[in-house]
Image: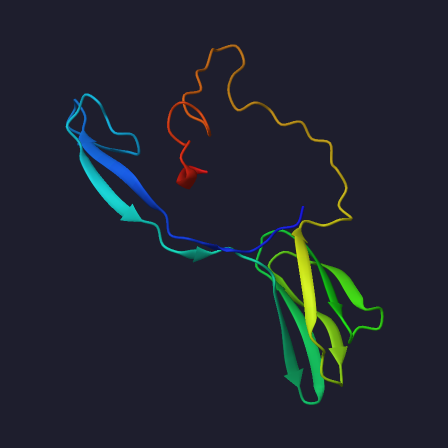
Length: 157
């Protein structure tokens, strides 16, 4: 699955504040029906999504094409350029690291790259995860994405 980078626009949302029957403040994205509440407005900060960064560093007479991986997971990068003998380079960049992809005494021609999170050579490891609750006691799940209670607005996903 290829990942793309875009700037996430600032999202405006509604938050309601009210005191419960015990006098404690409650903040929610759903307007309470039975309580007198105050509507608070907020605007989320604009943020950029992370992506690997490629740049050329020149030391003395050599040019180095560097790739920086900001993620806590490996990233596979495919770079195409007329400067590369095979026309493209495919490399896995380890988590939170910077590596040199290509070195040249000539200037490095324009390049394009695409990337995916993960490592194509990774192997599946069989591991069974346990359900995080005791199985013999009934449990009610009251909140989930796209559920009837909260977390079903665009800014919640």
